Structure formats: C-alpha cells, structure tokens
Length: 358
Ligand code: NAD
Image (cartoon, rainbow, N blue to C red):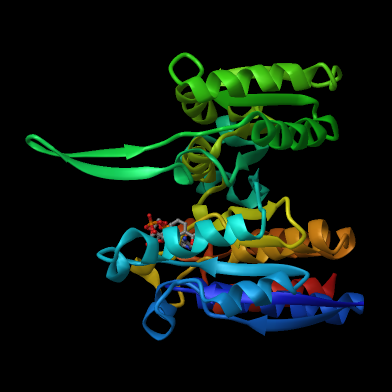
C-alpha cells in the first residue's frame, strides 16, 4: 500500500516544522515497512506573487488526489494589507477546509509528564490533563456573510454567525461518538444566554443526547469554559464547540500543554483529511531554528492514526516524543532549568533516533 501525502509547508516557520514531520514519517516508513509518496505544493503568502492567489488550483487538485494532507502554517504581517480574499488565512486556509469538506477539527490537548512544570499553571492544577477539543470548522462567523457600509459618522461592519441543524448534528454526532469511546463526559460549549445560533446548538445537542444515553452531556457557556479550563482542566474529557469559540479555547488550552508548539490537530469530515499544528506561522521566530516542531510531528502521528489506521506507528511517534522530552531536550518555548536547549532540526533528529530505537 502506497500512501500519497500532499505536503504544504506554507509561510513563516511552516517549511521548518513540516520538514521535521516528514523526516519522522520517513523513519516510520522504514520501521514499519510503510510506503509514503510525498508531493509538495505551495500555499499561503509566499505563493501570492507567483500565482496571484494564496491557494492555487493545482494545490487543491493535489490535495484532492492524495490520501492525506500535511500543512505547516500560513500568513504573516507582510500580507496583512491585502484585500481579505487574497490574504493567506481567509484566501487559502478557510477555502481549503471548505473545499475538502473538513467540518471537524480534533485537537488533543495532552500534557506530557516531562512538561508539567513547563506550564505556567501550577502542577496540581494541570497534572493529568487530557482533553479532546472538537471544533466545528466550516460554519459560524468565519464563513458567514461579511459586509461593510458607509454610515453617517463612519462605517458599519457586519459578520454573520450562521449554523444549521445538519451542521450541528454532524459535529454533535462525532462528539458523542468520541465521548462514548472515552470517559463518557461531553461538554458542549456555547453562549446560549445571548446567541440564537447557540440556542439552536443546545437544542440539537439535547436531541442527539437521546441516542447516546451512556454519555453525560454538560452544557457550558463559553466564558465559564474559558475560566474552568485554567481553574480545573481535569473536569473536561471531550469538548465540542462552534468554530470561533473552538479557535480561541484551543489556544488557551495549549497553555496547559506547556506551549502552543505542542498542540497537534486533525481536520476531518471529507474524503481527504488535513493535519496541521494548531499554531500559526510564528513570523517572529521564522528561519531561526527555534520553532518547536513537535505539534507538527504529533499531527503526523494523528495522520497515521486517523487516515492510515496505523495505530502502532502513531503510538510509536508519541512514545518517541515523550522520550525526547524525558531526556531533557527543549526548544526555547518549553525550556526549563536543567534542560538542554535544542533547535528545530535537532528535536526532529532526536525523535527519529528514539523512534528507530523503540
Ligand atoms: P502564532 O501561533 O503564529 O504565534 C503566537 C506565538 O506563539 C508567537 O510568539 C510564536 O512565536 C509562538 N509560537 C507559535 N508556534 C510556535 C512553535 N511551533 N514553536 C515555538 N513558538 C511558537 O500566532 P500569531 O502570531 O497570532 O499569528 C502569526 C501569523 O500566523 C498570522 O499571519 C496569522 O494570521 C497566522 N496564523 C495562521 C494559522 C494557520 O496557518 N493555521 C493559524 C493561526 C494564525
């Protein structure tokens, strides 16, 4: 079996972290007798000049005919002045998710033992944290109609927050299924005291709950969820929420893991799934060999698990990452006293070494 992987490095630290993940996948191929065929395609700010658009048609075509997509990150301040549809995020990331039908973003928030003291939160609060955040990815404010109009005294800007019953049902079902395979507790996060879309969200979740009586469903307002996440994170096992709340809460949750550079993600729902770190292109540290590649490497593990059904290889990557951290190697974002500072490439090399030694 040959697995075709579309590789989209993108901007900023994207190319650096993606090459480390590819290196680890190649080591997996060697260890587990798998065959990967990598094909690279441009996406994001770097391709705007050449292609006139951050998401060239050929890139979409390559993703569609691949078995999975590995993405770095896109965007940067040099493209912030462009009209919104040509900016890397709005012009490439959102349409790519939509074109591939990726309505669910899974973000496992896992705190590695060795990083407990790297979190800015106290050990007794974060220890044992393991949460799966399921974020709706193709609806809500990010995809609703936007407009601007002149009004006396200035302008009026409008973003529309739309959710339909089928959109909520499909993400809800996925969340209940995931919860029933774990601790059987599902937190559905909304803002039903204020937003109509959240009231529909809550009604649909309640109706779906009848089909999953073994799962405890807890509704929580997003402001409370933000507070509870840092106050008592262990109360959560699976969280499901709409697009923007999920975007914000997962960045917050990344702090529980020590750094946003540790948070992997899988976007699923269509024929081809997409794997990318939860962070952005970090232009402030690009091309300095400082970026933490572990979120991208762990995203590659999710690819093996969800797209290629190869649990053994996925678990081996996760074990190798844990070992590298146990051995004290750290990029600057997770540096701790007594540990050894390592660059992006060295961390990738160490993971490969540990993986092959398992
Ligand atoms: P960011 O996630 O890029 O960076 C936030 C902070 O976290 C920075 O200090 C950065 O140095 C640090 N950081 C991020 N990833 C890291 C890693 N792997 N290792 C070490 N440190 C890391 O978010 P931002 O600064 O808000 O956005 C920068 C650019 O990225 C913007 O253009 C934004 O639009 C884009 N962005 C892209 C994506 C994506 O491609 N999925 C997501 C979010 C933001």
